[in-house]
Length: 250
Length: 116
Length: 132
Image 1 (cartoon, one colour):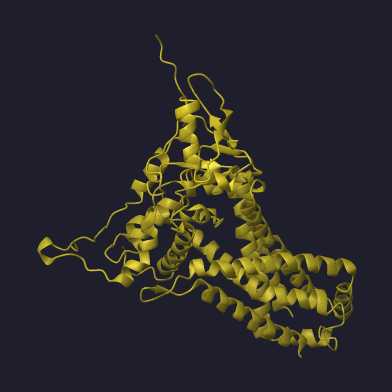
Image 2: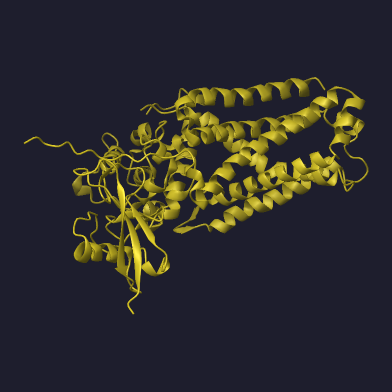
């Protein structure tokens, strides 16, 4: 007797409805299946109209983020057996506008990633000429920012963040972690440039350290820690600027 | 987006949080359990002893710190809590009220302690 | 043939979002500990104020601290303040990231140092207040 389980999937087809609905599908239960396998089964065998994002199936591309029973997860990393025999509810990531079914608009996220200036910035006149060779970096210096470079842009952290859900002007966990990845890179000199965004009201100061962003991150980037550390360094900066106003203007 | 002046409130929040975390539990145990159940020795909170202790400036400063900083911790945290439950539209008013109350409490405790 | 405008759907967030999942609920409890922190500080302020009002006013207030209501309020406050202390110290390694070369100093060591500090401070405060 083949085992099955039910997936209750968020459907939104703007050309035929103005409000989303839920559709329940019965899928085979296999020990080694993940939710993405079940969704692919639905698309291939049951309902070809279901739309969703996916790619690598192995947790490195960051495409398949969905809400599974209200928890942001990669659908390729959530095993059916962890939910069987209960029904699973699958919805698009929270906090983002829905385009169709499980596909959400990620424009805001992409904008914020670019605004944080995610590249090595050198000060005026301090760019090393090519014939002087590479910038050298020790393993210890690499260790300082490596964790923040592991982000796969899956946006689970934004979906987990209640601040972002309530106010999408918040810069958000991944963007700040990315900013810190460069701020803490020994080759970079662009921290002051990024501070305009990071140390603004919409930056780190909207964060209330719920910590769920780090809890759901599939790559252990720990964006919550990146944000709190930015609060400390920004506060030190602020006191320096206030108490030593004649200090070096940047 | 300009750099914010949040750091002043966040510093007070952090300092207050650390003071509260370190000092408040033992004080609560003293005033809430040890003292009421007679486990605190020979009437240590009697008027003469406490009054002479609080007449000394260093003690006044410590008590002032223990009262004032955690109030700022509350103000900052409570302000964001109210915003998080949907009061974002009046966030400026909330901030003014919360920090205002903390400042008021600070001034009141300074005045009271000064006059002992 | 007209183009039907297809709109994205914006889902609203209820103000009760924090009741939907345990981590969010615990977060809200943590945030509400600040109310009890402030409450106890006001209590301390009143105690100091009573001191300025003379022996009788002060002694009456200290006597009232023995009432069941006072003890009950203290116990509830203690529960919330302890939750603040524990969550506070447990988060310190996230903020205090220290390295010895390539190796990060273990998180347990950082938090542990604060717990030890807490023990020392508590003993010191008890000794000062109770004079034992």
